Length: 66
Image 1 (cartoon, rainbow, N blue to C red):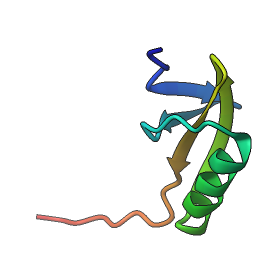
Image 2 (cartoon, rainbow, N blue to C red):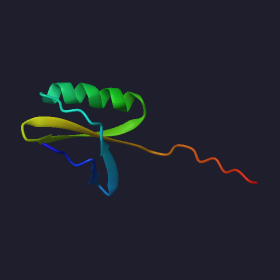
Image 3 (spheres, rainbow, N blue to C red):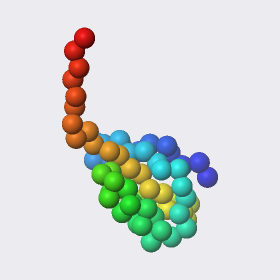
Image 4 (tube, one colour):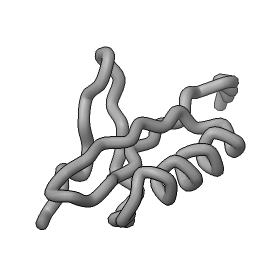
């Protein structure tokens, strides 16, 4: 199995976290952990395994001048 490294959902790009989870509950626990760190998370099922895709939104842009 070689899952997609990135997926588009709702016009937003999500990146696979690199782990394969045996159950939806395991994937859900990982997704909740990511959400606690400020990420958006999506769970996908593929080939009987569960994958977590995440994305972090930019919360602050800092401009510098030279």
